Length: 249
Length: 295
Image (cartoon, rainbow over all chains, first blue to last red; front, side, top):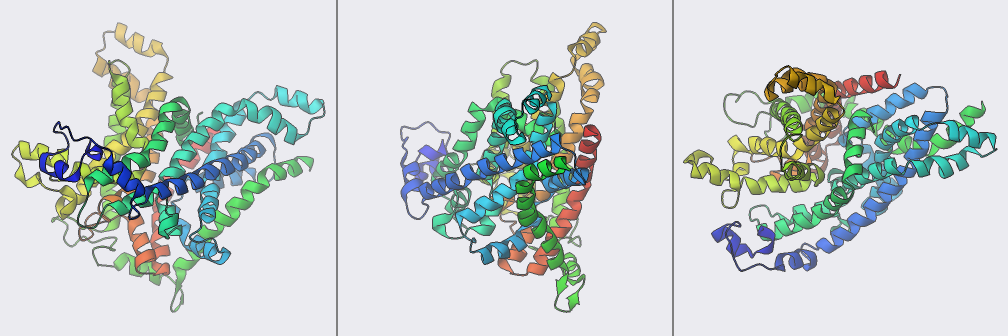
């Protein structure tokens, strides 16, 4: 409610009082005023989130297939490593990454943040997809093998298409997490024109004075994409959440 | 041999990405945390642990009976002590109740919004809800005549940490609800029917039949919530930046302060490693359970 009313009115009467003054001025202002420039942050968030969802999904699905269909040395240790990465805090890797990105010329670049998000997402998506793959019946794949299909063909033509529900779940969660991320963005992006939406929203809140109208308008805009994903992909979202936490798809 | 070749083909892109952008930095952090002016040693750890300035202290117990700051590490523990049992239990009981009550989809939606939105926004909403002029919580206390709590909670040392913890209960209960609801849904209906025929009340069914049979889900929730409480950052940054006077700071925020404000990479790394060591407790439980199940 606060987001659609002028600041003066909110503070004097409270946001819950009925009033005729409903306007979308706050929305227009946070989006267009160069001081906040939320439209830019929105763009940047999409530019980062979409590849950071697709890249780790492909790489992790391949890795999960490797885990579930082949046996090789150190396999169990590698799997434990994947689980360990899922639990490690982001804080544990950012300092060396900061200098690494600097030397690659990727500091304060959207591409750098995409790389970091992609690498970070691989572990949990591998875990999630591996559980799904190990539940799939192997007969079809074996039949295709006998017909002379390569593993690559089997993976892309047979395994991935039947895994679409799991892929949708992983994509819904990964999208939400990358979109919602604040810590990585705070560490690796500092130019105002490259900041993502979560960084932009925090800058609306001043140190002492808070314009709640602008802040709530910005907040609602920032939470809209993950909220829409949840509303429209609810089933997949919840399955992804359960799979991430317990390994049961 | 051929099998190894195929496995390598499927695994190498992921392994390379993880080796470069995850494993190398983790080892790097460990190394940086030991580098000091006088060679390799534990100086950074000693400095970080004995630090006494309120915004960066990890343990600051001399003022203990008085309100925070008590140090970031203690704040994280307080967070776990309050947030973990409440979200776990609330999620469990809501999951049970929502199976029978009308209007459950509304309650569910409200709980899930907290889980879906960016945590930064969660922090801002907490700031909003506990604001003296527009927030609902101080108004409520003002209405009840408890003027002591009719104030902007996030601006006072005695209430800042508490407001963040209480607010974060809403942000995370949706998770506990999801996991517990899935477990309850997969219980055989005959369990509950049998208890009903035996004349058990709704409450008895809950704590004698339902709660014990979803123990595994509860353990999952406990482990993941503990990790979440240890890693907490966005909420604190957005709502209070650890203030006022360090009274709501947490480990992850202290790490960031050392890195971005003090430019002291050794101490930032030492703080990150301390945080990682703590996460190893829930992480080990998580890994053991998964490995046991897939074996």
